[in-house]
Image 1 (spheres, helix red, strand yellow):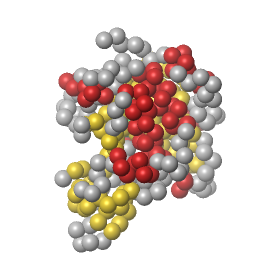
Image 2 (image 1 turned 90 degrees about the horizontal axis):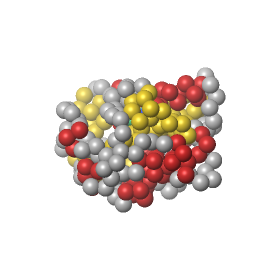
Image 3 (image 1 turned 120 degrees about the horizontal axis):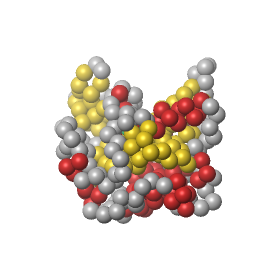
Image 4 (image 1 turned 90 degrees about the vertical axis):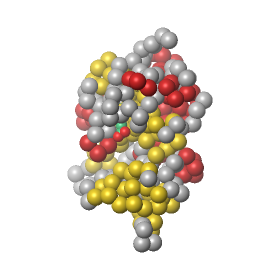
Length: 261
Ligand code: BTN
């Protein structure tokens, strides 16, 4: 199988007349596209600026984890948004992005991943994509200066490419479906889908694609581990759960991750 490189012109060809096309930058190696774009944002980069890298040496995940980002096999991409809104309006940004990336993968590869709350896309129960959203606030804390949405998709790895402890948990679109991914096309599809995000049309799709709903889960937080029953996801992307004592409560993704039982 030919390993096409990520290529700015190829990505732009898939984004004809799109206002973000000229703001796409492709790097060979970087620590983290999120951190790189954060520096551009501090220097005034525009809404819709996009950075991709063939490889990240310090790819960042949620909750201080790392994200394996080997060369030639993934799409590691960060988008800068300047939405000029209070932080509360962006509570669901990560969940909305999960829906956007799911749509892009569906259009490019013909498979629709499931979603594991809040930010993972799964094929055959294995993680093929993670999303890390980072916000910068104005000094008064009332408005968002900018948001960086970082998306990592495992495209063309073989199953054996994932070392322990990822083996068995992580996989790629190719390994799970046999579909070889045109990464430039997928990157363009993701950029377009993120640019088309709206606050209104994501929630029904998120709920129907979310593997956790209607199941017992374990909630892992700095305070320890609890079991609960996952009921639904609300407009802010929070998970509604019923505790064993019958209380219903919302959990925000902040410091929490969940596991199946
Ligand atoms: C997670 O699964 O916890 C989130 C992973 C997010 C990875 C992407 S790859 C592009 C961007 N740059 C980073 O350093 N992280 C995100």
